[in-house]
Length: 256
Image (tube, rainbow, N blue to C red; front, side):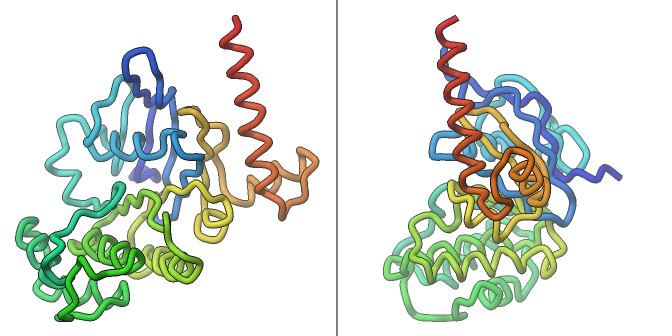
């Protein structure tokens, strides 16, 4: 069996003259949390959308569960749970009512799936509070509950801590860290904050303007930091240095 749950091969997306994802090769191992790190506009969401078939691939390939997704979408996508950008729910229904609708639409959820998913994310079952009254942290947790409803083998989470206060970030971080062991699943998560990825991920891919600058384990990144003259615990400076160098290289290429 292929050890990679997700493997992209020269994955590229262009809009007109603009290349937003440029020949990206990422390798997400089974049972691991893979952090896709990059500033806003680096191409993280576009990569996730291409993996999920929400955006057409300009060129390159995406393999999921060891097979090219093209032509196998109906077999592959039911095995994936995802949050891309802001989770969309009915504002005038409760969290439980929203999840019950999604469970019926999917037709794949087990009898106690809604109750179990809410329990795991720390939201009450059969609560009377409407979604419109939820805090941002509660909305994100409901989004994760919806993503895990059908017991997926792969979770794709696009910036799940975005906009949360420190307490909310802490809650979501602990929740995401627990998911691979609870569900025997693999997680691909994106963030623009290295401090978050560092605390949550086994492996990391660093993106800048659609290009993959680094891929490896967190320990690989620490080794790279030491070899580059940085302290192993100062990964933020390594990240900024990589991005700055790439930006300078881009400017040089643009002049040619």
